Length: 185
Image 1 (spheres, one colour):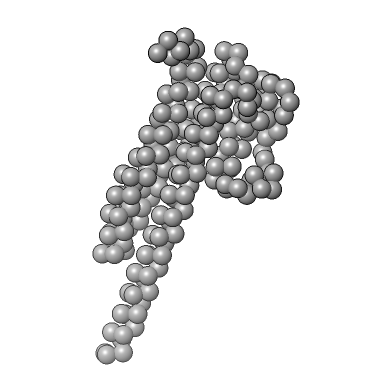
Image 2 (cartoon, one colour):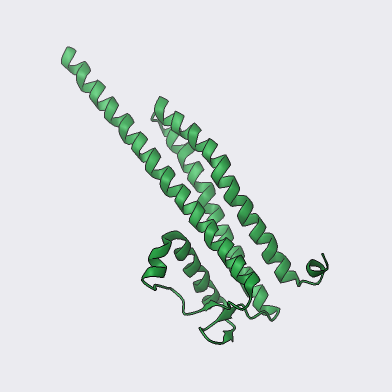
């Protein structure tokens, strides 16, 4: 408890953002799973403009949360640096990064979260700035950020493929039943 009281405001903000990202990930996995089932039923019963609007709202929450957490993470990294925390390194020495460097670092984490091992395997990156691995708490914070994106993007991809498949199947059934009705006329 004493360690939390002695932490700086920027570290407390980072802890709060990490907790919010974890909560949003749990919400996306479990609540959105229920919403996905509702959306699945809407597609089964009717393929209408209302169904497409509900699908757009379903994906909008995830997209907005991704954008908001990107901005929060970038600002919190800038705040941490302003307090003197050397959270970045150039491979050897701890360094400070400006707003553009910090933004590129965050984009790099987003891409690594979204493309998983492809970025690691081929040693691809957007930014030459790396984490200062000596600050274990920042490594954990960056991991939570990266995993938030991984979980959200996996959920979006699986959901989109599933709903797209359901819509295609519904259209195919409609076309087949329409052509069979014409044969009987």
